[in-house]
Image (cartoon, rainbow, N blue to C red; front, side, top):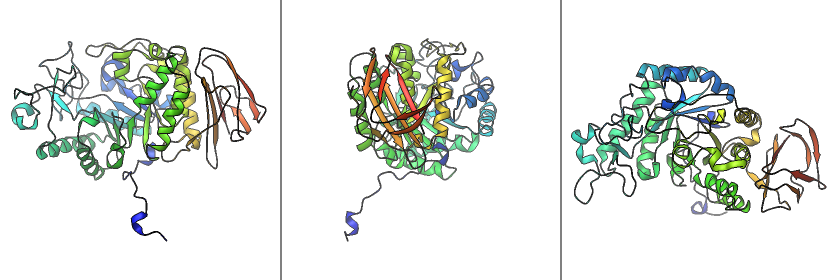
Amino acid sequence: MPSNKYQPIPFVRVSHPEWTANATIYQINTRQFTQEGTFRAAESELTRLKDLGVDILWIMPIHPIGEVNRKGRLGSPYAVKDYFGVNAELGTLDDLRAFVTAAHELGMHVILDWVANHTAWDNPLTTEHPEWYLRDWKGDFCPTPWWDWDDIIDLDYHDPALREYMTGALSYWVREADIDGYRCDVAGFVPVDFWETARAELEKIKPIFMLAEWESKELHAGAFDMTYSWHWNDTVHRICGGLLDCSALEVYYAWNSKFWPPEAQRMLFVSNHDKNAWEGTEFEQFGDGLQAAMVLSVISEGMPLVYNGQEAGYDKRLSFFERDPIEWRDHPNGELYRRLFALKHANTALRNAPWGARMVRVPNSAKATVLSFVRRNDTDKVFAVFNFSPDAVATTFADSLFHGTYRDYFSGDSVELGEDLVLDLEPWDYRVFVQ
């Protein structure tokens, strides 16, 4: 019998809230989400989002925005002037509370966007606690090095008093507005041990959910439930642009399977506020492969994100520093997300980590263009096939893992799949078989 020193040590110490098991997430850019750009107007959209299949609502920063060195007329919501205040352009604290209460009544949860790395130049902390800020070689306040974020200045987490203050601010919104957690901006620029201490303090109030805008395994140990999967987005983007072939996704999923802990929730997305504003809409990024990318973001391992406007097929880069309300309309992409989220909720194999089934590769005869895999547990099974290329392809499959009787999820047909299967796929086609 091996001694205790050889027993494996669990890497992940946080416990995910049970309500994240089959959750989807939706990002609200409050300024652009409605014609009014307010919490009250956003509240009127909650029933629609519930019908779409949304479970977690991520609200972009709600705080007053700095005026010194402001970008554009309205500024960036990530230039925080007051961590305990509400931006009057969006509404009041009571309006926020009403939004959260209404979301909870519909069975949804709400997380706020938190900017711990930096503040606006005119945040009162600059005069009340100037020792909490980093300095440049001249001894002056400074933006994050090497970035063009000249509307903000960096905080210095070597100071224990800053850590206590920031944890208190995080706790305030959980207590006062009953929010359910945070999406943390550039989380990797803030020390991990701060996040771990803050998580522990927040858990004393209620079970919370923490999303890091970062891609780092270490953040999952004691601080965050979920991290961004920038790598997934970049890989699929490059495949759809003809810069990589489909085997690059096998590399991604190999790392996802072996390097990342199985309890780590990863966020998959084809758009978010950064992508949309600075790199292009999902239509620009993925072209004809967009719907295949959307389906993969829901069917593969990870929690799928929808950025507001995607369900309307909105093909415009939203202005970041001005009012630029989304023009809402019905669109096939909204119906596609609705159907995909219904499947994610119903099929236990598609649950998020650690509840869901791992992906298992199904070898096929067109590896350079076709990705195929199975996710299965004792009760449910999904066999998914994607043609990430502009050419039609007929592919066969090896091994017997995919064999069985299924329902083609999108056509509704009952099909028997076995060793003689030859699947004819149109350009950028996808097939999802469920049982």
